[in-house]
Length: 114
Length: 114
Image (cartoon, rainbow over all chains, first blue to last red; front, side, top):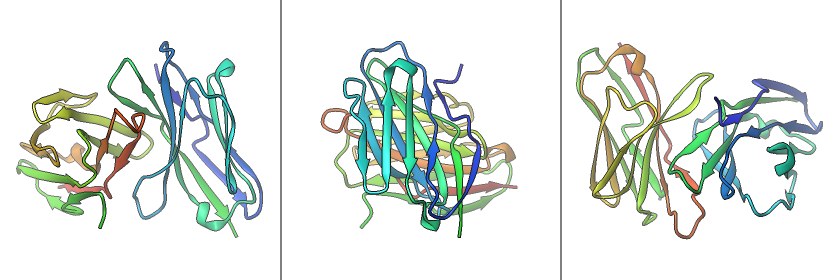
């Protein structure tokens, strides 16, 4: 079974629209970490945010915000007022404290249309 | 200078050839990882190493081998390349002690096996 599910394979929005990327995870550990990475067309993987399982506070960084809800095992990512430069593939990932591996979702490809 | 570097950045090889992908890091991290990325499949872990004397298989280690020459260097070898090993390969590092398992990625190596 997939430990990290990103059900949205591709999303297209018009510039300045808000968009939310969904991430659902599965783990039995009580201590774990959740991540979002951005992969622009150039191919590198850029770390965006880390959340640990004991911190359910939502976080905002500029136009980016993250909503962590343990009750629904979700860690969703919202981009407000999207821009063309936000076009990329976004990956959600899980790291379990008891294990030694990262588990990546299959990614959501976001296209922002000017 | 980049903290995690990979060489080569692009490689074309023929079926049956042995090739080596190299990764170096200046972050001082003990943990290093090799992943491959295929379209629609996200990133999958090939091997990981928590220190120079520790090597572990990941999800898809068949057909690959690794060498941890020093804390800063982790090489991935394809002993006899085959076409389905055509992929984008990433090296990553992490410091489990202070950075809550965040992984930092190199720029990737695009490998084409003909």
